[in-house]
Image 1 (cartoon, rainbow, N blue to C red):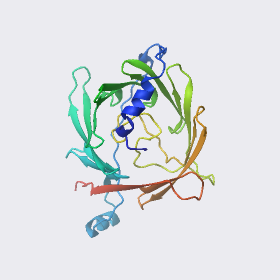
Image 2: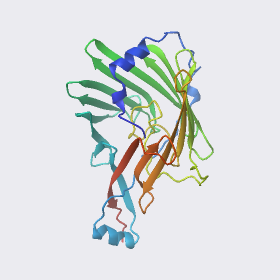
Image 3: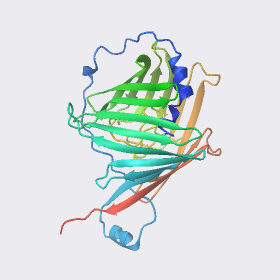
Image 4: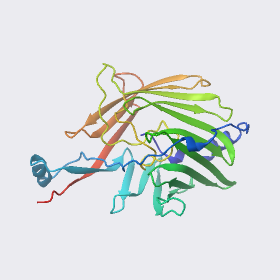
Length: 309
């Protein structure tokens, strides 16, 4: 959940990656070993101020439907049918605008989604992202083209899933050269518990271990509106095409970077939830009880689902 998403694909970052060895990586014998299983679209739920009409309907037991409208600084916009239309991300005095276009497929019935990211000068960003997803509702290929003055920089991912519909492998190329791979492990509850990141030589350069029990050993808490984690190398946090997200709220993460001067980092999360159990605020700290280094608000739009007489 995790990010200015595509903004981390800046020129300096990509050119550093491009300078890495281009040794061929033996990736996977065949991506066909991964099967795709259909996932229903994420249907969030709300937590903001509610009118007396809504409150009365709640008291009478009318079901509600929640739609995320703000995550941190990012303000989301939707098409009438509920698909995300775009969002704006104000930061550092700029406003990055993401716009989405859904295209019917020819090879796969579900087609593709084209996303344009633009941030104005003085630090102009022009990025095109494309997500191809299949009839099972999973993204199987992702491409990002960063339009730089010196030429385009292209990042491509091929994604593989297990029979449970969970993303397990992300194979990566940069400008046609092998960049590396991310592998994902899950527990019996379906929660993501580990991300392993490897470079082009299949050497591990990062691991992230996730825990869903709090410091006091409390039981895991259901995440009623999951947003893709920023710990993953997937850039889109709001499109529900990457397999089943974790069932529970992340309570802590241990990130290990073997080649870093500070190789291990612990992050703890705490949440404020509304009466329906939906997160309205998440805080991240480096130490239990310390001041947060980030505070992320969640805002929603709520509608009542009409029940036929």
